[in-house]
Length: 81
Image 1: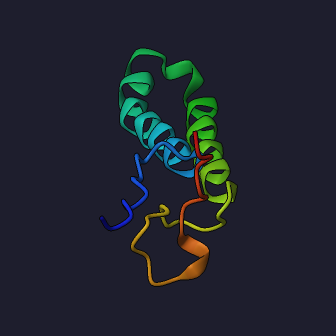
Image 2: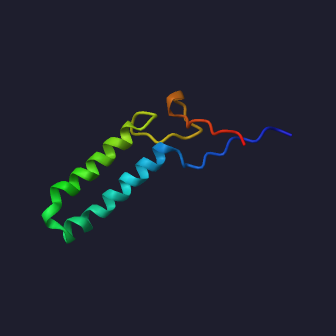
Image 3: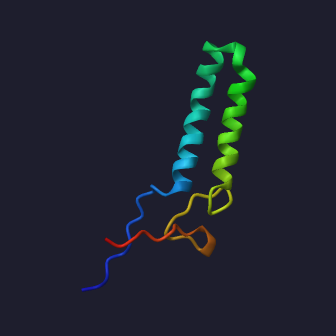
């Protein structure tokens, strides 16, 4: 029987950081509408969340996936149970 491929669940740190930053971006218009006195701080939080998401390894804007042609964009291997 052939070896099973390692399943990539998308729950690596880079994917989670990008998902969180994107969620903040979608919530930003609501926050700006309901709390207009904090607009600069709200925008700063969204920008910083994207900066953190880009800096999380592997560095860059691309989400790691197992079928990437670039070796630096592969997800980290999971621990075997």
